[in-house]
Image 1 (cartoon, rainbow, N blue to C red):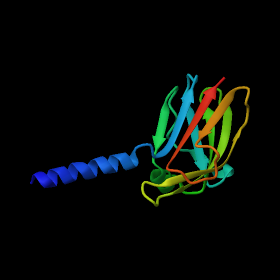
Image 2: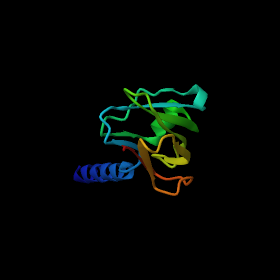
Image 3: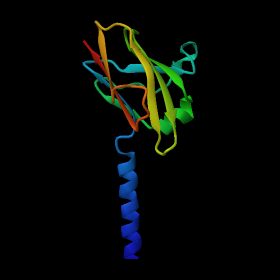
Image 4: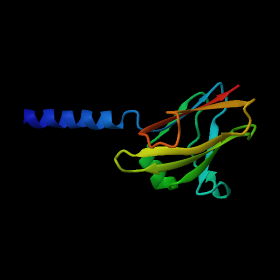
Amino acid sequence: MIRKIILGATLSLFAMSALADSGLYLTSQNEPNQITVKCGATAETEKDTGMPIPANGTRTTAFWLVKGVLGSPIVCDFYENGSNIDIGRANLTTNVLPFPGTGIVTDYKIFDTSKFTVTVTPYPIKLPVSAIHVVLKKQ
């Protein structure tokens, strides 16, 4: 019985460490409003994901969830709530294998660098990685 408990605890810790720092992390800084995320197969088919980036906060989403709900590859635009400024656009490809998945930012563009800066890590882009961190910082 004790072996089963130890084995279960070990497997749980292994699974948690495999999922730690994996997925898409979208963070806003110096931003009093949430940021709306609109995605679609093309820029013309983008729709609100219903998963905004909180004001001065982080939205974390697993790659398998992005692929399952939104598809892959996708185009996403980020809009500041209130002003409806289009901050920028990113192209993202996700894979579910190896689990918990990988993501590739194939391209991104900032529309107004005097109002926002965007940092994507790891850099350079265009490589499959287990975690992508994007920080949208209001100037």
